[in-house]
Length: 79
Image 1 (cartoon, one colour):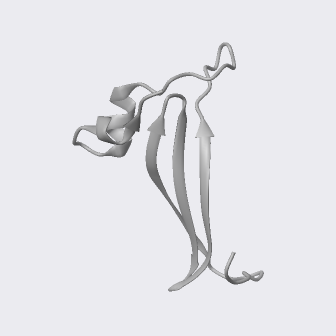
Image 2 (tube, rainbow, N blue to C red):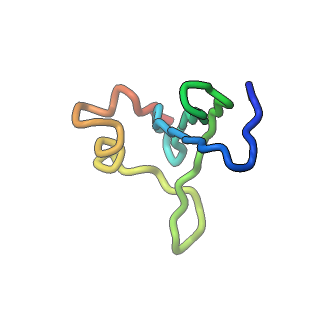
């Protein structure tokens, strides 16, 4: 948190995928009002199997799609 946002402010949140490890993906989010950074957030999300509701490893082809057209394995951490 750096600065407050107020009702009526136009703010933009930009989220970037930083990496993948097993069933988890790691993101960085910046919330801005114009050029001012209001907040920066790091988060991790867990992929779940819809049928079992258990963690599910993120497939390499899906990771490649979101991490770029190159070899995503350099950014995928093995578990």
